[in-house]
Image 1 (tube, rainbow, N blue to C red):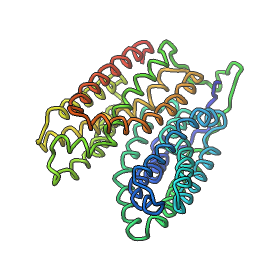
Image 2: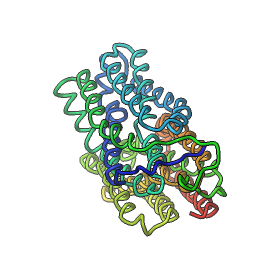
Image 3: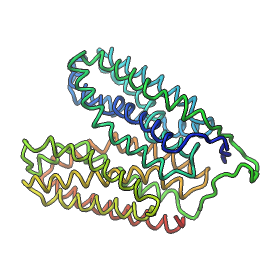
Image 4: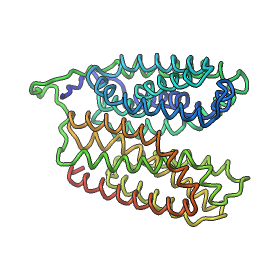
Length: 399
């Protein structure tokens, strides 16, 4: 499938990124961070353990993984407007189901609906909209969208805590759902409706050019490199408190050190946005691997040093922020429309699998004797290998 992009592009890329970025803040906050905030209350309401609640959430992520390929093809076929409406409807339905869950089965069903909604509201969906509507501004727009997305934990985590304390988790779920729909509407009504994407099988005239991208790079290797990066982030971010405990970080310092992760993400994305016009994707790959390798070295050797633990969390945030940008930008830069569609669906699916499974695997690894040092060594090698793979593919694709 090849795409013809409408010439009726009246929305400035910065405005487009701002509207879509606002949606990322509320949808990530509601579908991802609220689950952790409300887990104790949901466990009490259902008469189960917190671990069982998070297992139901993991099943929701697996649902996201299995649904993502078909949903990606649907978005690329019909455009973003109708899928965005469906996504918001599913988000609201999931919030209602989770607010009324009285047993584990209903809780699991609610998270499964939320998993499908994630595929039509969060990063993978946002990156597709850039491909559909602003392919020539991909790097700039994706960097801005991820910058907004980094604010989700800063804004929505305390919002969920305050709502839960003031109104109770049931009403908080409903309120978060309504907030997500309200703040997503500008993106749905304006950003996603201004362009028309027409599937084409015949040759395309020069009046409506499609993007012509290099095809020398190998999509399986690009997929492997990006998923390897995601594996590191998914493993460590979900277990950061446990990691800091094993690093013998003073408990009085843990809260402000954890906040540096979001600050690191914001810093790296702001820096990439400011320098993106001059730096290539090669530089972003090198910076990502460097941040992650140095962070992992600090994780292994900074026992009982709060300053080094803070540097570890900040650099981990920087590396994770840059990886998210690469995840959105590289497939668009390296591949033509057909191969981009296939790679995007695979990234969404395998990315969700990694997010669902790796936190549990990492938690078990950390419980072993010497688990922290071993994990740092293995993930450091993974970061170097992923960087090497992506640099070779970028060279093959002449980006």
